[in-house]
Amino acid sequence: MDYQKIITEVYSEVKSEENKGKIPDYIPEIANISAEKFGVSFTDLNHHSFGFGDFEEKFSIQSISKVFALSFVYEKLGEELWHRVDVEPSGNPFNSLVQLEADKGIPRNPFINAGALVICDILLEICSNPKEELLSYIRNLSEEEDINFNEKVAASEMQNSFRNTAMCNFMKSFGNIRNKPDAVIELYCHLCAIEMTCKQLSKSFLYLANEGEKPSNMAQILSPSKVKRVNAILLTCGFYDESGEFSFRVGLPGKSGVGGGIIAIYPHHYCIAVWSPKLNAKGNSYRGMKLLEEFTTQTGESIF
Ligand code: GLU
Image (cartoon, rainbow, N blue to C red):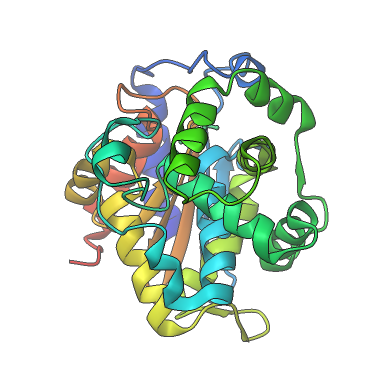
């Protein structure tokens, strides 16, 4: 299969069409990004890699980082983790509070904000320096040292984190947040403020395409059974309340972020990362979804 040719064609086709959607304005520091940025990067298990457009430019990966945080915590805690966060799609917006009351403070899954806040709370419990440990985890996966938080984005999110703070306090009232809510929010906002390129992302997530093993040095990041579970949650919960639609249209596990990034994994083969900042009504990159839909249509490859 000539993936490079297919992606070249699909990239120019999507680029030639109207760029619909809207850049979110609720995080002022990312609202200023050019709407026309558009990058895609493909990396397979042999480290054959190529990209187009703005694939080497850093952007705010936002909720994509929730996958790193989940992998980190899951490896350390094992199945005990699922006592504090569930694995069901929420069918609700990523920052919704409504289900938490009925679910007694247990978030539906680790990728909605409430779930990621619980993961951050656990990070604070198990790490002496969670921010540094997270960065070094990601630096190891990407094999690049220059991966950092954008402190301006983190500060901007902290100043506007009223909903996340409400969620955190609410979960604390049920005993599912054990640290001070301020500390959890501070870590969460940093987690969202990590910056990476499409190229770095498509390389970093290869362990999820390779039964948990980092292909370059065979280091086991997660066990095969845990990778199966993480990919299952990505498929069912990775795209907010549009996860069914992504699965229907693209047919691969993946994760999006409000910075306009999307990663998608084809198990045993490759990982693709796309970035285009305009989001559709459900908060997923408009062009990113289109490109991946066209890509799997052309290749005929999906997990189904
Ligand atoms: N920092 C964003 C928030 O908490 C993350 C949202 C996302 O990318 O899903 O609202």
